[in-house]
Structure formats: structure tokens, C-alpha cells
Length: 479
Image 1 (spheres, one colour):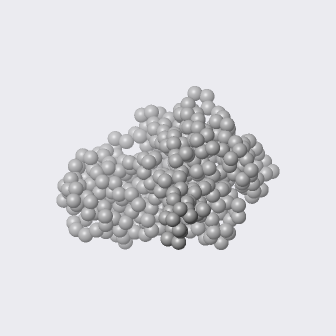
Image 2 (tube, helix red, strand yellow; image 1 turned 90 degrees about the horizontal axis):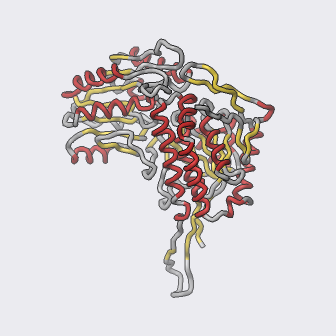
Image 3 (tube, one colour; image 1 turned 180 degrees about the horizontal axis):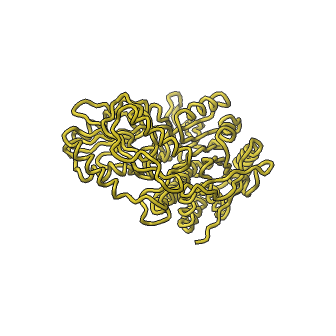
């Protein structure tokens, strides 16, 4: 396959160099070698992109476009993404280390579904009429309109580069907003390929702008910018707090945050053990553990603990680690070197505090950023690895006999329960403080279902239904 990878900033419908021609190298995690030089956005580039987005919204064709025609453009974009899906999946694999089969089905496949889904909502964003007490009969009428709010800034993470773009961008565009997006610095390439496809789809200039660059420069300026009216961010809780503060101080812009997690998975002794082992493996090792809803801690009922651990160890030994472009590979490299180093340190802390390292815990002895699938048992509540997220292929197991310890965390993104007792499942799911509760399954997300967290996992929803308008960036006007 011959793939074409754009590598410049995308501003006002054109690929352009960054100020003073500044660039950086994006790295292939499979071998640690540079893929290409990518333009590195500067403050002046942010100003140009926001100005282009504002003009497109206020003066351009996009702001005047009929919602149904806007939907046609989104459908056309989804069709183009589907036509280029193998190329997109290959770029995603090379840039992020995602196993190709997963990149094709989930990273790219769900991105295509997202744009198709929201394309259908473009002409269904409706207001309502409201009876008012002070109105005389047949004299007065109150109605509301749902309107786009303007320029939306989007800052996305590196674990699902294109899918995170789609989850946030599709809803913004469906509502008629314009977008300035900063991809993760280490995984910019599918976002730039996406920009190329928007141009092929004939999106008006300025509607979509892509700025590879640093969070401290590009992300911070977008948070502070007075012409940005909404910011969506997925990333760490620490950075999310900083963004929230900047959005408040600058111009009280709307903000949605999808932040850290330490999702508990509770497995009772009356579960379907075969399924619990299979889904427990997926809950941790899916996408190399670089998954915001990954099960950060498994609570296994004491009577089945040893059997569960034995079964998991057996399954880990079967996992093929290798080149993510090889269709038979199950476990590819971690996304970048700094993350690999953090995983090594994370496991060292677990061993130091007395957790039992059953397998893994080390870098694989080969080129690239490969880390062994890892299993810890005898993990106590006070330990670092019981509290903090690894964001990697590290399974943390604790026994339980009674009581509910799963809520003893400041995070609340996702959770899971395995049991054949539906009453128990429903009772526990009501008690769990998490935005998503999986019952006898895991990692099952869909473009029609809202996604977001509680507590320090953030607020606001990705993929929220447009008619609910909790997540979709619209303003409501009373007339």
C-alpha cells in the first residue's frame, strides 16, 4: 500500500507551514524511528486558525448553510473516510502503535460510524414552544431555538487519535459550529489525513482547522482565547483542572472534560467464569491498556480468586507481542517512550510496596516501546497501584469477601460487574459511582450512547444525543 501523509498545519482550508517553519519528528513506536517531520504550531498559528474559524462561522458559507446540506457534507465525509479506511488504519498503526486489526475496526470504524450518526441529526435540532402564565389567550407565544455557539476548540489524547477526534468534532459540526483541533503531539498524522478528507469533501474554508503542537503553547492559548466559545478536552485530571480554570478566567467559555480513571471491575463467584476471564482480559489489555475506561482494578470474590488468576496467566502466555501491522499480533508497542518509562516505574512501585508480581512488569527486549502484559495480585487498598491509573497493560487484582470498596477512588469514569444474579447486578450498578456501568460485558461503547464520568473523571458527555443538548455545543435562545 502507498500511503500519503500530510504533515503541515491545516488552517483555513489549506496545508501551511508553522511560523518560522518550525517542525518536530513524530516517532513510530514499533521501532523508535522517525516517521516524518510535522509542523509545530506557534501562538501566531493559533490566532490565524481561530480567526479563520470565526470568519467561517460568522461570515462564510458554513454559517448560512441549510442544516440538511450540512448533513450531506458530513455524510460525504464519512463516505470518504470509509473509502480511505485502510490507509487511515495503517497511518494510525504506524503513528500510535495500535494493532492494525483493532485500528481498522475500532479506531477508524467507529470514527466513520460517528460522523454518519451525527450527520443524521443535523436537521433534527429543534426548539420548543412554552406556555407562559402571563400570556393572554391567543396573544403571546414563547418559543426557543437551538443555535450553534461559534468556534469550538478541541484538545484530544494520543490513545485513540482519530476516534477521539470524531467523538468530539462530529457533534460540533452537526450543530453548525466551527472547529480548531489540537491533536496529541505524539500522534498527529490521522488528524492531518482527516483534514485532507474534509477538503476533498468540499467543506468550506475555516470550518475545520488542525494544529499539531504542544499543550503548553497551543492548548493553553485555545483555553485562553476570547473568540473560542467552547472547549472539549480529553486527558489527565491535572491538565483538565488547569483548562477549566483558564476557560473560566478568560471568557467563561463552555467546557467539557473527560479525565482520568481507575475503573473497578467486580467479579462475583456466581459469574460465568469463562466469560469473566475473557472480558476481564479485554477490560485491561484492550488497545495495550491505553484505554480511558480500562479496568484499573479487578475485585475478585475470594472463592474464585485463585482459579481466575490461573486462567488469566494462561491467557497472557498466549498473547502474541509484535509488529502491529502483522494481522496475527495481539499486543503492540506502547504509544511513546515517556509512557513506556512510566509503566516501568509504576510496576517497580507496586513491587516495592509488597504487591505480588505474577508476570510481566518489564520492557520487552526488542526495538520499539513494547511492554509485557502484566499481572499483580495481593494488592491492598493503600498501595500506589491500587489508587493510581497505569494507562497500560497492567492488571491489578484484589480479593474480596464482602463489602463494596470499588467507590474508594476519586475517579468515576467506568465500572463493571459480573454475576448471574440480575438483582445483584442492578443493585451494585446503582451503588457504583461511575458514568458507565458494564454488566457481564466490558468496553462496549456505541455512537448512540453518551459517554462521560463522575467526580474527578470530569463532566459533560461525548456522544450525547443532540435532542438532549447536554453535550452538543448549542446555545438556547428564548424568543
